[in-house]
View 1 (cartoon, rainbow, N blue to C red):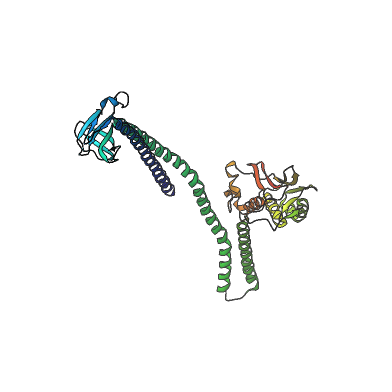
View 2 (view 1 turned 120 degrees about the vertical axis):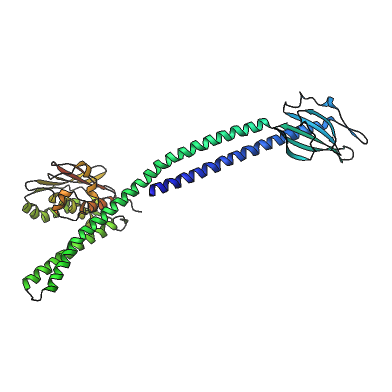
Length: 411
């Protein structure tokens, strides 16, 4: 529905623009033709004044002064009138019936023919009084033909432009609405997944509270178990809320948070923290640091990126597997590479794993809220870097967090 309405809006707007432009071109063309015709006929009419012979009380026309072949084209003519409007003489192509001479420019239609005319006064050179009129006329068939050709060209051009704008508008609308529709779809998925994630702890809290309220006999052991369930639910909801707030602020400027961060020191600290968890899970952990590598940004958020990538590798690497974390500086960036021998990711799911709350169905049993990788990528991009992944099902994954060697530009 949105795509159709937007397409109709594009089509109506472009059609209106093309129609207005076509009409503007036509009016301008006709105005120029009329101006050129009027100027040309004024010149012919003034030339016709040379054929006037002035008497005491009358006018005469000396036709030897004007030649149809020398002055007039085949479509032009001259007529002379006295002060009473009587025709004194004519030369060239003129109307076959008498039409009153009126000073100025006008069009005279005679049957199927139409003439453009310009009439100017004849002034007595001695008294400077008007004693007659001279009318220059031109058959406007060529002008009409030119206008017809223009109308045909404008019509065809406008129709082609409208059709082209419709095709182009459809492509533009598809490109414009596609990401919007995809965003709406992801928003719906996000809302459904967020509701699903929050419903679990809320259900546990509500069930434990209801059971405690219905139990008339107090049992310390039962009460403790219920309070622990409530506490666990609150902690889970609190973590989800904190993660969502962190994602919401991931587009804020780093202007006041720029520090020189040593990723090697962070990884050394994380190695000591996570070594017992990896040992308990039966997964090997190896950390390789580089003393000269530095990252510019928020130390807490840089650590959060690494924590999320390490925990992701731990969650999806089966017992007997191995996880390695290495700092690899390059000329333009500092790379932190997390490799695992876990279950891997199908190609169609590689980009989806960075969506909020998105998890492969078979991996939902691994726990987690589905926000870890989304947070890692959002924070890395906030620092001017990114998080990318290469993976094959059953062959493990390689996550690379990149940070520019120069501080990210702040707005």
